[in-house]
Image 1: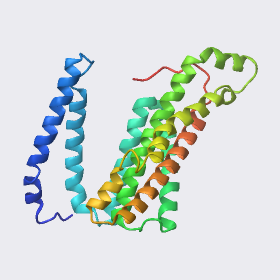
Image 2 (image 1 turned 45 degrees about the horizontal axis):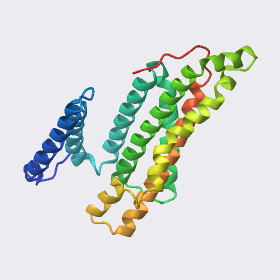
Image 3 (image 1 turned 60 degrees about the vertical axis):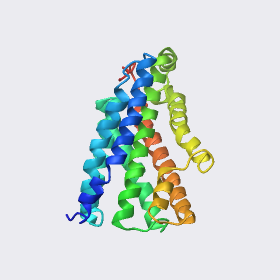
Image 4 (image 1 turned 90 degrees about the horizontal axis):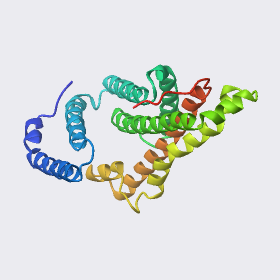
Amino acid sequence: MTFPADLPAQLAGLLPTLVGIVLLMAVVVTVLRGYRAPHPVAPALALLRGTLQLAAISLILSGIINDPLWVGVGLLVMFAAAVGTVTRRIGRSQLLRVAAAMGLGVVVTLTIVFTTGAIEFSPRYVLAIGGIIIGNAMSIATLSGRRFTEAVGDHWDEVEGWLALGATPRQSTRDLARQAVYFAIIPTTDQTKTTGLVTLPGAFVGAIFGGASPLEAGRFQIVVLAGILCAGSIAAVTLLHLVSPVQQKPVPTV
């Protein structure tokens, strides 16, 4: 592992960024506390945790960005953390199902992206695209799993009625599972529809800051959005196919 020679200078240049972040979070806490919203400090604590994690991974990535072996290890760590996050949200008993669903979505998506040549197959791009795909697959899997659990709980009398009529556990929750997938994909679909109109996505802006032309940055972003939709759809459908045979009322998770 090797680190850039100018790393100390880069770290010293972060002071203005730190000041800006502190001021932004001070505004967030003040606004929420003034409105007496519950847990007004939670966003600031979340940002602090994210900052520490991002700082650590930034230092690590500086040394592994061009090493295929370490890039693979990094992606595995990201994937394990993502699976752990989803299982905490929808139930720890679903660990293997979550891993299988997300793994299928990520592998299929990255295989298509790199075998077609849509994005150059290199450690740098594998890490970048892989991290984005894993993170968004995690969000969609979480939304679909939680939505399904809540829907089954809210419509448990209906589910029991289907079971009493002879429907299988999967048949009794099939419509609820389909609706859960649909609602889980809505945020990503809306983001895709409004890209370039309402928002400039991070991958697009990052590519431009990295020196790419707007056309090249746009091409990169479109591949990213298509990959997110692909991985998220596979992860959500697979996860709910695995968890939808429900025989007792699920207990909501926090």
